[in-house]
Image (cartoon, rainbow, N blue to C red; front, side, top):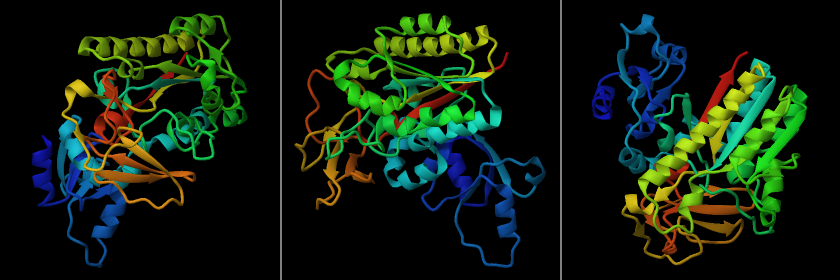
Length: 372
């Protein structure tokens, strides 16, 4: 089955089945989405008049297949389909998908429920959900609920805790000791001039500066990981996107494969120590590669950033064309839709991020559970 066939079926009757998590974003805007079929059944069986709209049910119940048409669309929609619908589906994306601001709570819930003896979080600077679809590990698409950037300074000069990596990790390191993981350790590739952002991201952990992932593996292989939370920041595709005029697909793919290998190294570390735990992978944003897309300037461009505009809270500002507003306590971000950009993209940058698109805004969230 494909999106077109599913859309046609939804015009006739409710459809129940198994669907890729991004499929609902590409369906009619008046779609009613149910992940709890019992709620729908009770509503349909009531004496109240029901509104007429397409109904998609993602909880499959074989004993109700006589009542609802069943279909499967398990492949991810195309980049074109998602970019076409995403600007009108931002509110639904926040409701239906995991968002970057919910990741810390998700990890806490897993630790509470599963009683992990160790947790490793691998943070990747620049990696899209589209980049990892051929990986064997189960991967959940995560929506970046704001500008797709690594971090941002608020107008008061402080790092905004609701944007980028600071919003992803939140106060995770402070909370985990209460759930049986009292030992904390961190690794980062950042230099000292970025210490303020690093302090916000690593929170109560003092990260060790490393020059390569091999250093991380070497040090962790000599460490007893029982009762430990390890947070690692690794350069991803962001390292290729900036100050690199020419980047080919083979180089991008090689970087993605190296990240995957590093994830597997971390899983192997827990296995070697017979630890019941989990390795998580999460990215701050993906990359919109210039050579793959026909990007277009907005009519009133020329500002500081190519794919978003930051404005202090309280400052009156006319919303730019082709943008969606995301707000934090400190500032508003006007995030540009695909394929528009504001300031001219640097000639020696091969990629860009910060805007609203499948490539930039949908990132991978991976959990690999390890049993002794």
